[in-house]
Length: 328
Ligand SMILES: [Zn+2]
Image (cartoon, rainbow, N blue to C red; front, side):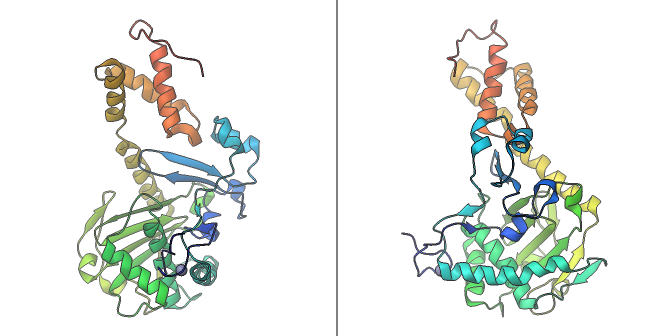
């Protein structure tokens, strides 16, 4: 058995560990706005694909709105849960941070800048460091912080101490955004700057004073902040309130760039060269892209849909492609 990622001492015997706290995951895309466990519908965004998962109690009828893939109709996997990465003691530590921080949703969020009076400054910082550290250490979004940054967070979380860390964060919140928009979980970093979007929160974390002035870009957003305005666990956490239109712009822009990053053109050309010895003609490529869009949202950005779409388009052009497909 592997050692626990946090303490690096005890055996990682814990099963069903949440990487993103369940009190947040259950708000993400929860069906009918029900904040209950097992009612969630999630999209896990990887490099090139988007996996959909459903909470255990999402009925077949609702699942069919999002997928035509029969194997997903019965599937009860929750992509946000991992086995054998932490020990029970460290898992209890995460729960402690989460139980304290979840009260934050009870703040009124009726000013431009809300002071988090629900938890101590240190508990607020430790909560966010524990989430970001878990996302990075488990490579939950296929992205990892640099090792110095990650180790700094690990030590703080493990020893419950944020003193002298030289780490700063800005926290933004968009109240009621999920009433009209899907929310998701997304993480990325650029050297000593990291960004996490989860539910209606967006946090930007800086490793060191210098990083706060570096203007490093993540998904075409450049981050530069004055240390005095940032949180670091030594004074009450301040949460800046985003108008819905701003948060929507950020989310839409990331999703748009994500889909562009998939490099469909390169991938389909490679597949086409492999099968037929030449690049995919432009009009065939366009037809394949249209075909991909026709799939239901939960199926759209999956490898299965990419290959089925290409197969259908090729079958529709027997004059160009003298191939037979085995029925499956
Ligand atoms: Zn441990």
